[in-house]
View 1 (tube, helix red, strand yellow):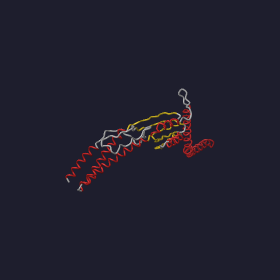
View 2 (spheres, rainbow, N blue to C red):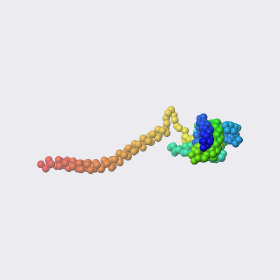
View 3 (tube, rainbow, N blue to C red):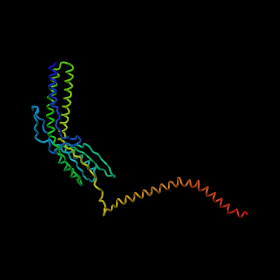
View 4 (spheres, rainbow, N blue to C red):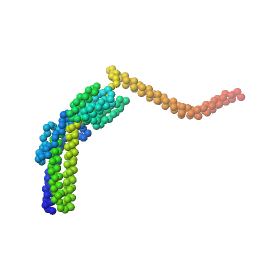
Length: 287
């Protein structure tokens, strides 16, 4: 019993050293695009690598993303061409949205393409535009983070194997439960490290390009010394419509409210006044 507990304590010390918090690493958003032009995922280190030995990379692992704003004649038509372009190089559309303003649609589309085709696709996209308003490219080196994940993974797997040996030596239920709990925690850490490692590999293999497709102006704006004729016409038409609306309200009130009330009140009054005038005129003649 004491021997098992001693081994357990030793293993816990190993775990605490292996799983110590690592230095902060640059974050890679999972909605960002994937990788650089020509970049390749470096091969995993050989299985016989010693614990603590860092893997060697023939190339840096770079994640590259691009954000483009293109002025085009027909955003919807160009969006279809962008989709076909992504598919032609082995990529795909990860998201797309369309907005309409004054019957003129604009499209925002994100495509993911192989890293080797990153620059080629950007050149093709620029060729589709009447005007390129923006073309921003960002790069992020994740080699250090990937290397650190490899080291963490080897240490965690070594710790897992030590716990498995402890589990074989445990003789009491309490010892077995404690070792199984620790083993489960280490296994969870291994899965998280593997997941992050796989994500970095995929982001380095593919690149994301987000394209905002804006409509080209239908006609050249007529402006002379600050004069905006089209705006003036629209303002005048709006004022005319408001005036007609007010007139229609007045006519409706006259027909439905004022006229009936006038007939009900004004007609008897007018008839009474007329009768009074008639009697006044005929009264002197009677005398």
